[in-house]
Every structure is written in C-alpha cells, then in structure tokens.
Length: 292
Image (cartoon, one colour):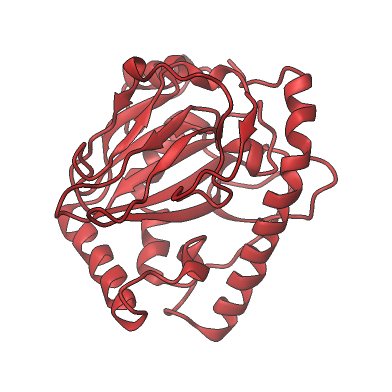
C-alpha cells in the first residue's frame, strides 16, 4: 500500500515509514487512562475468582467472551492507527494476555511470531501491544531488534519459564546491544511486525505489567495450505477474500454460546500452532521473508 496516495488517520508519514523500515513503532496513544483502568479492574476481578491468576483457557482471544476487551479490539484510536499501516480492510486474527508480577520468573525469549500462526509470512501482520498498566524496564517491557523483520529464521523450543506457548526462541545469535526497549505509559501501545525479533525480561518491580496483545491482519492474508480453517473477526472494512470463518462479537460477558465458540476457536488455534511448526523448516528453505 502506497502511503503517499492515502490520507492517514492517526499516524504521521514519518511514523509509518519508521514502522516499514524498522519493523516497530512506539509509543502510540491508544486508550485513555480511565479505559485502561476499566480493563485492569476486569482482569483483577476475574483473577480474584481464580486464585489470583487469569485463567489459562482465556489467555487467547478473550475479546470473544468479555465485552470490555471486545471494545479494546474495536477501539477507534487503535484501528485508525492500524489502518494507516495495513489499509482499510482489517481482521483481528487473535489477542493474548501477557501478565507479569514481581519476581514471578516470567519472561519472553527472543522470537518471531508468524511461523507459529499458520499465516503467510510474507504479509504485513502487526501486533498492537496495549499497556493496561505502565510497561517499564523494571517490570519487563517489550524489547525489539530493529530491522529483524526482513527474514524468517530457525527456532528452537522448550525454553523454561518462557511465557510463550511452546517456549520458542530464535536459533541465531542476537546482539543485545541493538535492543530497543519499548516502555509505555498506561493506555499507550506499541506496534511490531510479525517477523520482528522481540522478547521481554522478568519483572522486578512492584507495579504489575498487564499487556494485551492484539494481532491484526489485512483481509487479503492467506493461511498456509493444509491447515484447519481458522477463525477471525472483521473489525473494519470489508472481507472480499473469505479465507477464514468469521467470529461474532459478545453481547454480554461469558455468555454460554460465546464461551463455546471461544473454546472452538482456541482449540483450532492450538492445532494450527502445532501443525505450523512442521512447515517452519520448509519456509526457511524457501527463504521466506516479509514484503517490503
């Protein structure tokens, strides 16, 4: 998409150019402080019912079962900025919580996202990482390696204490001196490309780190052949391609019909995640990388 031919809604042309060149953008204003506090209150009210932990079964796609999170995924300020990067026709492929408490051991190793998602790795797939509480160096904010989004690399799995589902990390040497730490105020967000090397360190701060990562894709994005048909939510524009099943928005929290649909969607996600790993080496052999 040629950004010189369209009218930008939220970002400047300099910000868009920075994302395209370096693979990330931070910080970008998203929620108000009041909206972020509302989401934090939801999280902590749920945790209070589940021994102080957000239920693992709801870590993925919880916007399908909680109306406050649905509003975040559809938030006009977030979507305006996403549209400036992806264009007007946008799907929410998924969302996920990344929650850290002081000295809980949780960290995220250096990794790339898209090879585990069953999506065309050449596409411009963006994560909006929304800070529900402040994200700082002390509580383990995200870090990225600028420019690393240009090529898919090999990964290894099973790293302990890793917050990622498979404990994956890139199987190449990463120069930590190049890392950019994306500290965010409450309600701000960062963007990173699906092939960006990114990770985060353990929290040593009393302030909790609540991060809500939303994965957005253009409607044209194709899934990898041979995988189960995934489901997505149309959040802006029109889907002219119909590569995925479309998900409904929740009308109330934890409606039984929505909970059942959520389980089906996340079960499919996990199956795709498992099968996509087998495609990983094949994609690397093909020299897969991001579109310019």
